[in-house]
Length: 160
Image (cartoon, helix red, strand yellow):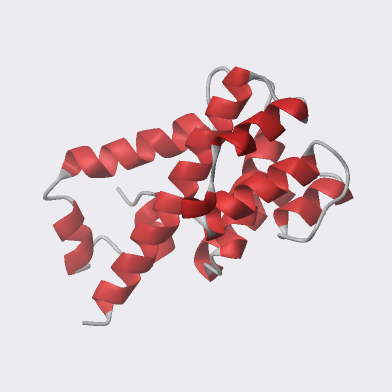
């Protein structure tokens, strides 16, 4: 079965890299379970699907991953988000809270993770995010950045 990372990397079931990924099925299954848990959790902690997809789209846009941008853009569009959330998702600057603080946090962790500091979490709390939401956002940001890197790496391996 083709998972989201296979799809993002452009892998088909008859590709050697597809088969190579299946040498460690626990990694393939784990990545897919993680994707589902951060994008479509049983308890969304008050972070709706459109917010989660907007964060994902912002991350893949910052990473300039065209395949994932198309995928997350289509998923987000199906939920008919408002213009403010669409601006956030497109990696445009946003001014209203709490999206402005979230945008700064997502951008920092995605583009310059070594500069992230405890104060970033404090700013998320000050913008109105509670602890479970901050944890959920952290998991989401980590996964989508991971997904982007793995898909990019697999695409590069196809060139060899």
